[in-house]
Length: 322
Ligand code: FES
Image (tube, rainbow, N blue to C red; front, top):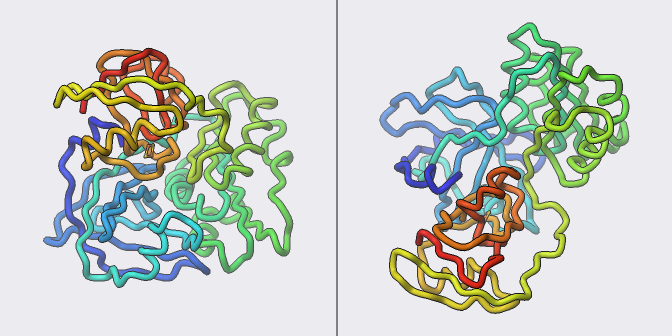
């Protein structure tokens, strides 16, 4: 969700019901409280959801884009996570109103002559609407879906009904790891590969696509940040908050977000790992040093915005639109 997106009005949606989709996976069905149609969306889209605690989280839409009356989310319970999934799994959400923004789409289906979809675990949520769309059209496609156990893998019946033999469901405990070599070798250059799942899966798919397909063939959506590289947070710099005129010092070892929050407690953030886009902030002067995985390379080169949770500055002063 970019800063332009965040300027859009939020809306309150009613949690119509929660549904157990698989072991550890809860489905959340949202609807307009007055029964109005919801904004249209396409496969790969997600919602920004403000939980009752105030936590902001992003969840892919896993339902049917043709159904304008509901949005469906699938949430994996992560007891060692940052609390959002625990809250969704344990709070009585049905009947409550939740504030949402979106849908937004950073993972859209691009035109291609063939599609290979690869999902790991809860990474199936943005992939399922892609299956729905591709199954209704003439372009060849396959889905490789891995999970720890069969009963932990959500939407199996729906996928089988939609895709039949195009869908391979591979529980690790009985069938081992996904055969990525088989799925990715010998494909035409005009293939688009979509992958969503754990970092290890994305990395394994990336390595094969780098070797086997033209640049740009792979499209990924991450739920966790990749293994941390050097963040370069050893140098101090100044940040000027243009709207208030305050100038703050960002010392070594403190994040820009931490410092900004002291002056602007309402500043939006979520993952603090540079992957969700919630803290994207417009840069008015200075050269940002990006450490996120949200912006594209060309967006990073333009230097017009940055993720302040992980980003720093290449210049002695950075001027932000805050
Ligand atoms: Fe998620 Fe900064 S809070 S990218």
